Image 1 (cartoon, rainbow over the protein chains, first blue to last red):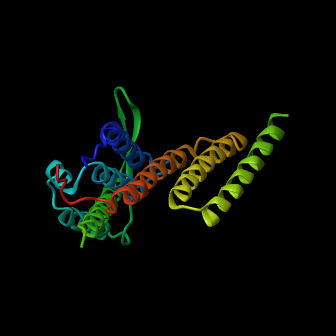
Image 2: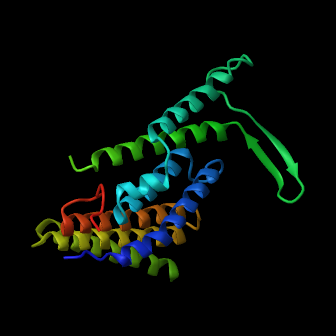
Image 3: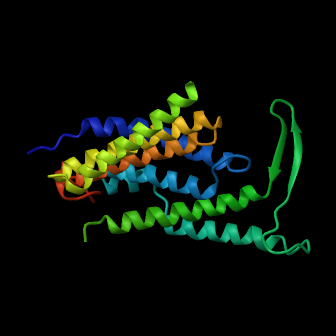
Amino acid sequence: MKINDVILQTVTKIAVFIILTFAVDLFFAGHHHPGGGFVAGLVFASAFVLLGLAFDLETVRKGAPFDFKKLGALGGFLAVGTGLLALIWDASFLTQTFITVSLPIIGELDVATVTLFEAGVAFTVIGVVVTVIMGISEGR
Amino acid sequence: MIQWMLILSLFFFGLAITILLYRIIWGPSIPDRVIALDTIGINIISGIAIISIVVDTKSFLEAILILGILAFISTVAVSKFIERGVVIELKRDR
């Protein structure tokens, strides 16, 4: 019997972009509102889970040809590296700082080094979760 | 008056979740339990929306979106497992 899941695939093609946009929004909302790198990484990984559910693993690998183990390692390096960078300026480990710049259209904007740390956390979570999902779903 | 109605609707959402727990525990078949879990997710989303009206904040809206995404993905995953016996296929044979 030929399996037909055109409804699931059509819904997925739209919903994946909504989920990815929401992940980016959660990542940048994490300074003064609920959100942050960890939740953004989990939501990002759930988009990959939905892609794997609607299509198959070969298509997901072809669409996102990264090595997710290396992405997780890069994230861990980034997170620890921003923590170690504070030692140069004689501050304690993981000290973060920020400056306030005024841009022409946006106005006052806080540029914080904690964004780099959060990016590291998000990369780690994406790498680990997608690796685990792809590892346990190969049918063995 | 509005406050009283909101509290009453929260009570009824709790009642609906309690009734759905019966369907999860003693549900005759697996699809009944899947539908009950999805409905519990929707009831929790509605409850969070009403709580955010009661305490007058916007901070719970991310939680609503995440719960919606997770309820959708979990329902699709369990449905696909019931239908085909595998959650994420390695390669489609089509």
